[in-house]
Amino acid sequence: MHFLGGFVGLIGCKVSCNLKAPVHILWISMNNFPSVRAMDKEKKESVSFTKGLLQSEELYQYILETSVYPREPEPLKELRDITATHPRSIMATAPDAGQLIAMLLKLTNAKRTIEVGVFTGYSLLLTALTIPEDGKIVAVDLNRDAYDIGLPVIRRAGVENKIDFIESEALPVLDQLLEDPENENGFDFAFIDADKINYWNYHERLMKLVKVGGIVVYDNTLWGGTVAMPEECTPEKMREGRQRTLDLNKLLAADPRVQISLAPLGDGITICRRIH
Picture 1 (cartoon, rainbow, N blue to C red):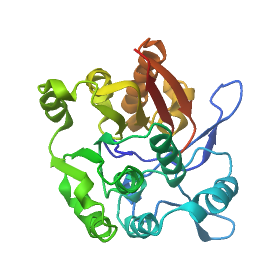
Picture 2 (picture 1 turned 60 degrees about the vertical axis):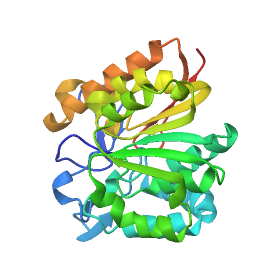
Picture 3 (picture 1 turned 30 degrees about the vertical axis):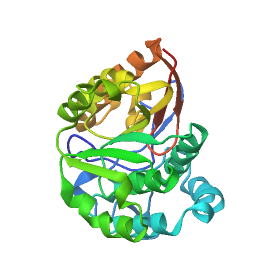
Picture 4 (picture 1 turned 30 degrees about the horizontal axis):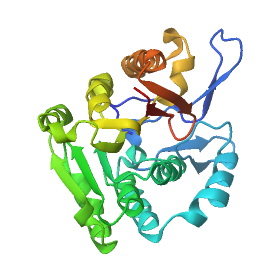
């Protein structure tokens, strides 16, 4: 989850605003990331929230504790715990979304992958652990600092050799990959969790890089639940991201090159299977 700018709001709030039914949304305060907490006014105690769009924190915790955490490899758990201490820990891939990504990687027998937006590397490590020993990941992020936090865990897991980390804007890297004809249709999988303004630009390039039958996954495609809200009901600082997400979702839904599924995991992930 890489947001374009800070915004202030509530977490797990229910909003009506003349809608036919209340919409459960995920609002994050980027100005208070170290705790990402809401205050229970009656109990006068801090209540922690995690990243998810389900109607109750208890239900989300049930899913994590029953299905996700028991199957989570130890290196991923270690990196998740380390990332939790980062001021912007909410930017990490949600573990339940990560579990689905790992399954998609296995189902497609992915070997060559692309990741745009790395942060501390939870989804990157997950991919490296899942693909074969001779698999390769082209990982791109503007800022190496967060990646360096997770790098010791990646090294201890013995999978650094699978990762080609590039500190750069992503579009020039994708364009450079396309300069080599062998890279066209040469990748099996891509995961995009970066600047929303360029999602469609990434998509156009990935439709040439990822093979027919390959998978592209986009993160944050529900934008805190605001995609189901009128603009006037959306916090001002979330409106630009909301509109970009709405535009992307419409474009993906109309793209004949892909079969899609928008899953309400984390902040929403859209799975695109290239069919043309």
